[in-house]
Length: 359
Image (cartoon, rainbow, N blue to C red; front, side, top):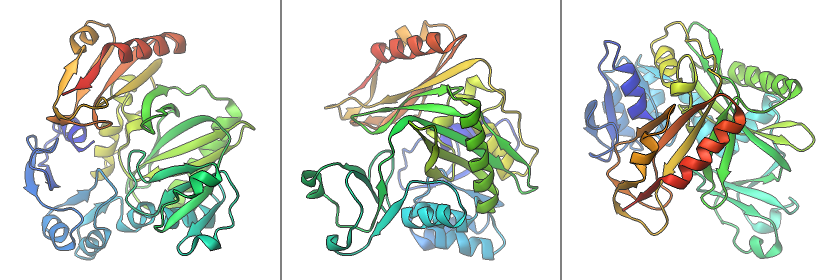
């Protein structure tokens, strides 16, 4: 995400600095790179103290250091308070509850299993550290219960899901708010991460109205400039629930690079620099396919079938500059434009059959 943000923002006259523990990270060669641990308080503080703006591409950072940077007069977007809330699932769920944002009922697990009252089936989400489908598991049976993680967690009632949706909302310091069209997410059942993303989502006017209310409630309650991806469930009774929120650029907004008047990356640049927000209108139908490492393949990456994909019209390849692949690792994505939803799905399925990420 940071790489694509910098690629988009390089058309403006700014300098970009990146803190990452990996000297071969995606951003290393297109920025002023500083090697360091973004979970370490002193490292983050030293990195940020002379910057005009500090922002994140992943929420698992040292938020206490970001708070101290704010105390020193450095602008942090989004602010450290909302990052702290979102990076802990328990605080995030309480935030939804306190601000009347509809989210599945939950229970906090912080001690003995004997205290658990929630009924099967349910979802367990580790309080911290979850990412790209990790740190989340479905507990359907008493047999599954034996595999319950002992760490502090949120236990959440299972929603009878019809569709998984996402809406990306941006707010600048002047209070201007911009919302991207709702997208529909299709997950890979094996990897538990996003496979396809489809824009616009096939939803009713009533569903759109519910999402508008949730987005408005969230952005007001967050009380921070930023770009936020709100992941949603549409249940089989037509009700919308918030799954979780990311305080950053998001996989569900990648198709906006070619599918919208301006991308989420352009929008985020305008947020962090407090410029007027961009037009986010969609151009017809657009979609995204994640490129992830194949099973049993670890090592120097090879993209099998990419030349065939490049022959296709209205098809756009984005690679992340990662030299090493491993099973389930996101290595890039492919965006597609189409004149109908049916054409879009045909193209995405065809492309998925053509390309493989191997070692």
